[in-house]
Image (cartoon, rainbow, N blue to C red; front, top):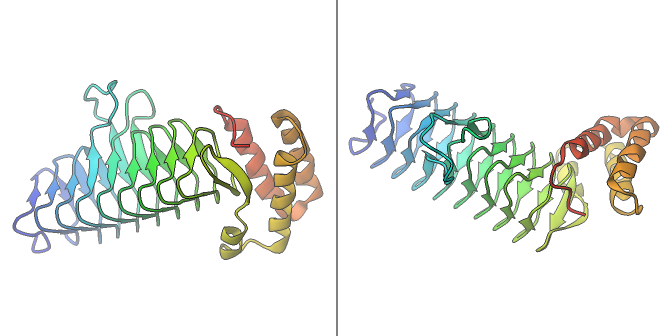
Length: 262
């Protein structure tokens, strides 16, 4: 308990590993569980049915696990789950889920969450993402692994952002962003594939060329979405070195309900 500042308020029912650090004037509620190595900075509030994994770092003034900003929420015991090794900077707000969805908001592992980021109720965020300052997710948004949201990007409820996608600064998203695609603008438009990000993550030249070919089919061939999906299936066979990546793109298109940024 010597790692908990005397001015912090930790409910006796909260479950904190003995290695957890809690800074000055922070508040930890009764239904909170925090695993080993996590550091909670000063003036942080963690409440609700919130589970936090190992080796996370919460900077000052964040609100984690507060009630959803949704009028339909009636106090149901919904949850927030945070994985391991996440960095959460100042003034972030992560809300609980709602009974109208899975009942849980999730953040995976190894994410870099900059200041003033909002994760609304029922958002599902993968691992290794980067959210720059003031990126904002409305409710029920899904974000895939390795996606990047630049500063002030805003995402409409129920949108999906695929793995390795890149969302530019001040972009307003009202439709889904397929994997590997770079979008920007207001309204958002597709600008190409996230080549620099793919290179940094070790994608081979063959993979990148295959993803580029798939992008051209989807965006530059004047095909309908259904026609493009059929053409992508043929590309999986033709471009064996990028087959898994093209399949991931095609399967994402099968799940979209809001349409994709074109």
